[in-house]
Length: 317
Length: 234
Image (cartoon, rainbow over the protein chains, first blue to last red):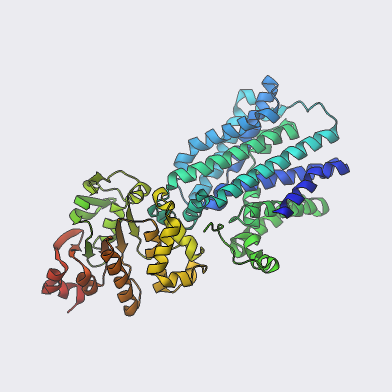
């Protein structure tokens, strides 16, 4: 706990050391992915419903704040909850039929949904479609601009992580774990599976939409192919799975490690190779580390800290 | 307490239960026997709300259960121990028990229920922090029963709790059920251990090809040479 707060404090005060805008830009995208992976994990990790369509919520949030800024000059810093809301409403509409599907069927349908939403946005007249939308910058210099987005993304990451942590440790988290392990049995134990799945689907979509809402303001030029990108969905899934989807900490770890790996590969080698490595990683993680590096490292961490056994959820009794 | 009337259940176009009627009274130990594929599991799943009947009525303590969702039925104290135990193998014994106390009424008495379960099944306390998947078959069955008890059932339905267990463990499990019944818990037991199950039962039903073909006291059915030869091969 103290270690976490200390890391957080260092991260929050980091801009005081006047790092380069490149570094701030890299870090804020890392925070963004950590926030996205945490949000995704509330559904995908805790219930086992692997959504490959979180880019849809991300993109809807991005377009919501962008349109409000473009037409009404409303600042995304205030309208980002609306971005989350639009994503959550969309999740409510598609969640009812989709969450009845299990396993790969659910993943496939969510994957296709992103493509469908992307095409609608591309062809709608008021989104500037394929031309994309140029958004006004916040009226500050480029360094301050990066610092602002850096702090906001950091805050969103903390928010997503806290929500995930709270859910994991609550009665809700226990019900979700039961759904993940065996949905039929969960039902016979009195878990309202339909409502629980819907609840976390909405929470997950809301957080994802908020993050998208800030991202569009940051990149300041918005095109459907930037935000409704299947690659974003896949990256989110990979990061959460890689880090470990059973706990709230896993996705943060996964996003941090893979963001660094991706950056190094892209800069030092080439982007093509980074994609191939990521693909191989995804396969390797699913086969060899189904519970991620958190679960694989748990015995060592336990020995290190002298703690007792790993728990899927902390006991309260 | 539980009344099932003229229940018809289909899997697609295939009819699994034909006009099944059955009754379990407060405090009774009722056994349902029948060969593989007779529809025993289907009946329990329908009572639990996991399957929707095409027609017929299920009432529990005077309340109609048809159309209620599984978790609602659960909250009313009608708890099932599923076939094949269906534990959460990667969770500890204690976590498995705690999940059993998920319905809000049971949640408040979780710690007390756990004490009671440990008193009844001391083996579970010895293994409390072990993952459920590492328990022996008999211990797993005890855990499945313990998990169901955490929900504070008024009627406990068990689907083949003796499946795949050594004879001595089967006897032990049956003794536990008998003890629970003596403490006032109403029990509906589905079992292939015909002789043992019938000797424990106040009353019993025989299900064959989706129809109830016999019913009576456990003693009556045990004395019925037709039943004994059909299900025990004697």
